[in-house]
Length: 318
Image (cartoon, rainbow, N blue to C red; front, side, top):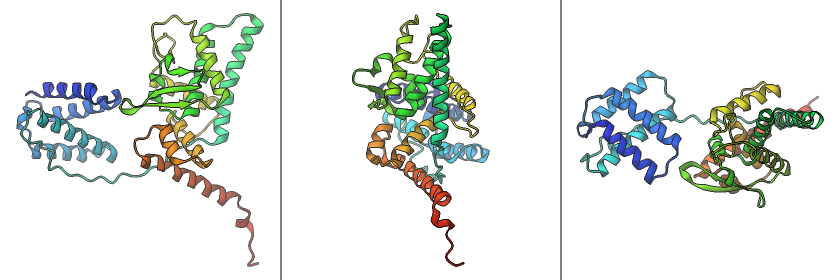
């Protein structure tokens, strides 16, 4: 079987049978394109363990990939060749004897401070009040500007209050929000569904105002959050909006929208939330992923004690 046919059958099986996300399939596609570029004319049946080892060694020699990326690329190869073995294209997967260990550096998630969050949310609210105030006094305002400001406030409020991923946010459809029950249906990684309760009245109001404004937009899209062309908003647009409000709020540290998820999770645990509940809210498959936030919480407590604990300033040896 030629390489392109094998990859095509493999990717089709991923999307139809395993319900993997578009992002994961894109990563698999990229990894397999790299393999193909190294063995352009080689039939899949002729791949050997030495071929795979040589390919992995060549990637390692480039010194441009993180350990996490290398681990994923090897996982892609293993899944791909195992699929070909199951499909009777290969008698034996050439990756079966491939064993590589990578030391994954544990990095603590970056979180915004309460002060930074307040500044950003106030700036979002200030923008909305300005345009609505102008509309009331002048009896008109640019509809596009009103729409975008309401949208920006609603999506950042929703990101922070629910801890959802950016990809989950842009995938939301209008019918995924139930205002009566104050819940949002989220489709997470692996197409797994979870329901998040909107606990803040201000967030619910912001979302309600945006949806009311959205009803006046001519669009065929079911997407909850629309771009200025009335299509589904992209992840990159969310990043741009977030960065804009970081600048307006004079937040000097570099954050990404995903940091809102980290911040929400850390604050929940710092305030005494049960780690299992936080795991479910975030949609983590394993609790070990959630446990990283307990370390962030502990680090913050350590800094507070070092800075503000009065016992640090009492010296009884004098």
